[in-house]
Image (cartoon, rainbow, N blue to C red; front, side, top):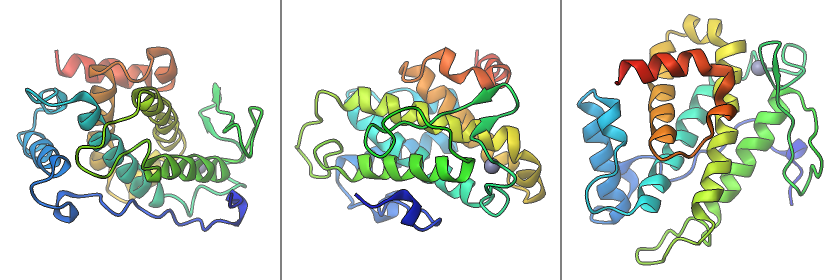
Length: 219
Ligand code: ZN
């Protein structure tokens, strides 16, 4: 396994991030198209609901890939500010610090600087997405039994990157003029994981206030 320390700071986005690059007529293509259309209608609450007759795993797979790609892009905009000096720990304010453990390189929960933590996290997610046994690429290949539990772990971990960006880099996001993009993306993430109970409420405590606001907006 490549050491995360040796890897480039630039994350490689998954090669199939948008419907344009998915083969027309495939299930994922149709679902992504559908998701884009409902998102375009402006109601995020409706946009996360499982389309009639569709399989949950398929729907979750499309979203996990999209959230990963979006978050990769959003974090990419603040990497120059997120360095070991300014962010010596992976935190969300002073109350929350996250420890990294992947069972391979880091066998015990380990304190890492935010950039190293995010790099380890994103590389780990990328490896999950690239694993065809977990995320089948071919039509008709069934999803494995542990698919949803793996997605829960992925999403729980991705949440921490949102939390770090909100607490530590929101000023920079605003200076770049992309706070609306971050907010919409996080709203979508929150509504999606809530709709399918994919991340426990207690794991999203750092953004609890914002989460309550979002929940209130879509009642
Ligand atoms: Zn940072």
